[in-house]
Image (cartoon, rainbow, N blue to C red; front, side, top):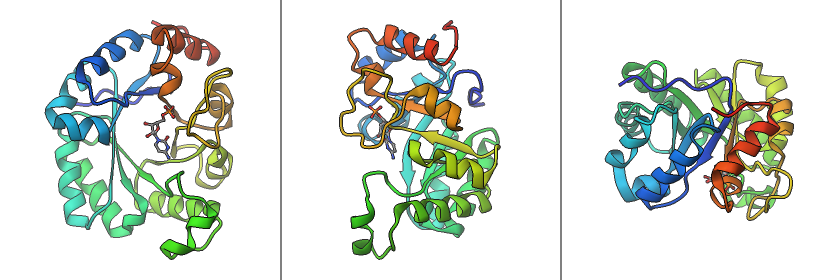
Length: 240
Ligand code: C5P
């Protein structure tokens, strides 16, 4: 199955963070004209498996399957082959799995679905400088992010997930063709919630983000369709 192409026009991927398939489908239908893609993660996948993903890849929007694989190269490659065959447009692994693992993942994805983009998580944004020594890493987090993002690029992956405040440095160091996928996006007036370092959609796009992952500001709004339209409009995009 050929995945839907990753969009250039509308960079917003709505995070459908729920275990309820009907609710996720309704949300996706309501916002589909105003977003560029859908993101489904561990929460949804562990409840519904591959069969739960297919209805979303059939909706005509690109799907980012955010499962963050981290295991030995052979296992990650097998998981990537299986996931890529679902017709998803973006998959991800942990860069801390190392170069051999990332190269095996690239080969696996390309063998099944050459147009599926493979990206890596560098450091989880839930980790701060104080957490690093206890897992054997030297702070600051920013240095680890840049080192792992460079390794990701050398291994032939398409990009990384990063926080908004890392966009400028990574764009400068890694060039224009590397995808920067950015969560923690908050339009003016929306609740920050548990995100720490947030940025507005237009600000993040202008700083160099390729994809903006936005969950609760859309899914938690009284009118998700209107919230998605407002975000699209703030980016200068006319909703379908
Ligand atoms: O609701 P909110 O806009 O905060 O959702 C952000 C989405 O991005 C969630 O699905 C979250 O799991 C994901 N994410 C994140 N931070 C990361 C990686 C992924 O918030 N570093």
